[in-house]
Amino acid sequence: MKVLQVITGLGVGGAEQQLRLLMRRMPVACDVVTLTNPGPVAHGLRADGVSVTHLEMNGNRDLTVLPRLARLIRRGGYDLVHTHLYRACVYGRIAARMAGVRTTVATEHSLGDRYIEGRPLTRGTRALYLRTERLGTATVAVSATVADRLRAWGVPAQRIHVVPNGIDADSFRYDPAARRAARARIGVPEDTFVVGGVGRLVPGKQFDLLVRAVAAVPGAWLLLAGDGPERAALSRLAGRLGAGDRVRLLGECDALPGGALSVPAVLSAMDVFVSASAEESFGLAVVEALASGLPVLHVACPAIDDLPAASAPGALRVEGRADALREALSARRAAGQVRLPPPPVVGHYDIARSASGLLDVYARVSARTLPAGPAAATPQSPAPPGAGPLNSVPRTSPPGSSLPANPVPVDSSSVNPTKK
Image (cartoon, rainbow, N blue to C red; front, side):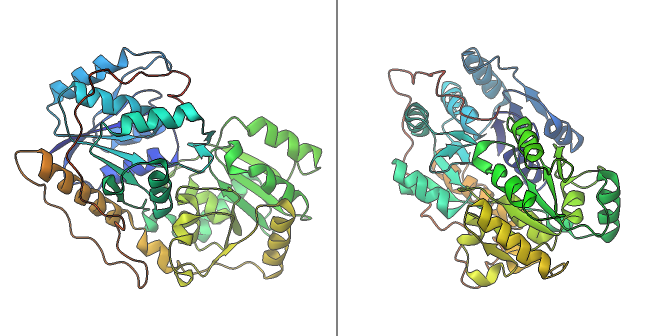
């Protein structure tokens, strides 16, 4: 089987890093196409030996990407096209059908009730998503919560496959030497109580609540790993609250260890991790923090909420208000600095298990659409007690629909709700 992975961009982000981790573990031939922004993850993929092509898409109205992508798919002789992120899913499904590839899988990485990929959902965004979704063979949801949202939108349940995100837990293992080095580089005194967050600086992440909460805890510092349009506003807010010298916006940090300020190194420098998002599709950063042994405060996190409470004893769910976060942080500081053993939830979301689940999806959809027969799927790792199967949504796909007589119109106002 030969697979083409199509993604909107390859800057630093959860979906992008997840693709790189999966490519390291997929025992099928895969190439990658990015529509825009061949950023740090593109460089990392190439260093891993993966072929990456940049289509140089010039904004939402660049419909020339459709024939260009279709030609690339046709010339590459791909058996399956797998799309990631909203814009790539819209264009990729259409281009795959134009190229004659009838097996198309799309992963829904970041669908919330009100936001998609950090941007507000609109009626046009949803309508275009649904019109192009029916051109695909299957849609992968990264959590049962996302699967529920897709069904509520009208995506047929039999087309939805749940394959949770995964992490390389060993790369996030707590390292006291990395803690000292990261704190020294950032300028954090060794005995300081440090709160942290990781993610794109967009309104949906509600980092403003975290800034307000930390500003109200005397002497506490805040480290935010990530970048985005809210960076300047967050910096101004910290200054107005008199906490400008205690809030450090670190910018984009590599998800993999090796750099001076990689995400694992920054997590080592923290004493507690906070996810203040009101809605999440999975909560990858929370799982990474738990792998680093950090106590976690979270407002919404399907990765934890979809499993039994005993799976993540170091995580505490709190209300999404600055005062509630402040109280929880004060209590956490009073309990003293502590590093916890990685809880069962970390093992449940191992990246090898995610790759196995994705191979299972490929095998199931290919068995129906490819004359060569099913691909060999790697056996799935067992789930922890009470967690349920990896793919908890029925996975029998109906026959694929043919390309409609009238091509799906691409509304430039709806095709890019994302960060790209």
